[in-house]
Length: 144
Ligand SMILES: [Zn+2]
Image (tube, rainbow, N blue to C red; front, side):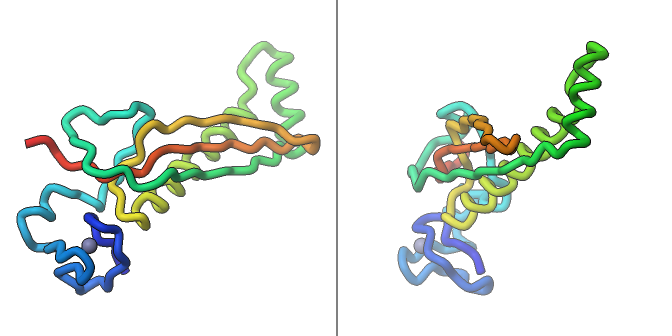
């Protein structure tokens, strides 16, 4: 299945013209929208691209359990004056996962970019961190 890059309609893989908006996948218009590659950006604009349409807000929450061992590791690392490696590694993993999720969700909506991405971290009582990423899924086209 694939999404129409113009209207977001769910279509079969072999469909070449969208039944909803008549978007032609083989036409010249389709070359404007590259939906294979999702652009992620923390800014509200992407240089070299026009924002054609705002589609929806997409978000991704990742819970990280610190775990006793990595917690100890972080504590020891802090004690030694180096960075809290256990935490930063997990945060990096969370970020990678969250970004993949954002891309997947944007793609499903027929978007080809997520702009204005912001993230926040909150922690629960059980030493679980929630890393939340939120952004706006948009359809962009390359500036001519
Ligand atoms: Zn369509």
